[in-house]
Amino acid sequence: MSSPFLTAEWRRLIMANYVLAPELLADYLPAGTELDLFHGQCFVSLIGFYFQNVRLKGFRIPFHANFEEVNLRFYVRRILPTGEARRGVVFIRELVPLHAISIVANTLYGERYAVAPMKLLWSENDGALQTGYRWKSHGHWHSMEATSERGLVSIEPGSVQEFITEHYWGYAKKRGGRTMEYAVQHPRWQQYVLRSFSTDADFGALYGERFAPLTGREPDNVILAEGSAIAILHGQTLG
Image (cartoon, rainbow, N blue to C red; front, top):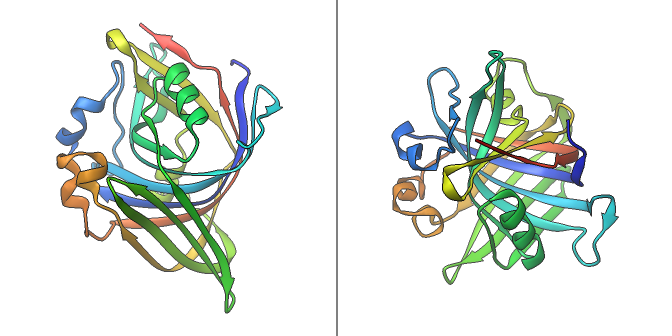
C-alpha cells in the first residue's frame, strides 16, 4: 500500500442519495470498473461536507487547511484477478472554493474539480444541529441543509447507509482511456438522527441535462455522517 498523499478530516457529511437508471452513468465509468449496485439499485449521491486540518505529504498549506466541498458521485467496483472486489466511487463533479486544491486534484488524480464561492452553515439551536452547505454556480446559489439530533448512532450492517459510506477506493478517467485508482482510508462512521432535510440545487445546470430530473425530487434516502480523520493515498494508473 502506498503512503498518504493527503491527510485531513471530513466532517458533517450530508449525503442525499438518489436511485438513477444505470445507463445514464455509462459514459462516466472508468475502464476496468463496473457499477456497484445495492439490491439491484444504482445510486448517485449529492454530498456536502467540511474539510478540516488538511495536510499534503504531512505539511500544512497556508490558507488551505479548512474548506467546504460539494460533489456528485456514484458507486463502482473493480474486480481483481484474485476475485477481490475493490468498491469505490467516481465523481461526476466536485466543487471547492480554492483554486490550488482544484488544480492539484485534477492534475494528479484526474478528478473533475471546479471552483465556486461556498458558505458553511453550522449551528446548534434548541438541542438540534443545523448543518448546511451553499455554493454559487451558473449565477445562482444552491444549497443542501439538514437538521438533526445531537447524538450519534451506529450505521447498521447491511443497510443502504452502510453501502453509501463503505467505499474505500476512488476511480477517475484519465487521458488515453486509462484509469486512475487510489485508496481512501478512514474508520467506520457514525451518523446523526435526521429531523429534516432540504436541498435547492439545479442538477441540470450543475451536472448536465441527464441529471435534470433530480431537480426538486426528494432523495430516496439521506445520511448525515459525523465523518472522521481520513487519508488519501498516492494513486496509480491502471492499464
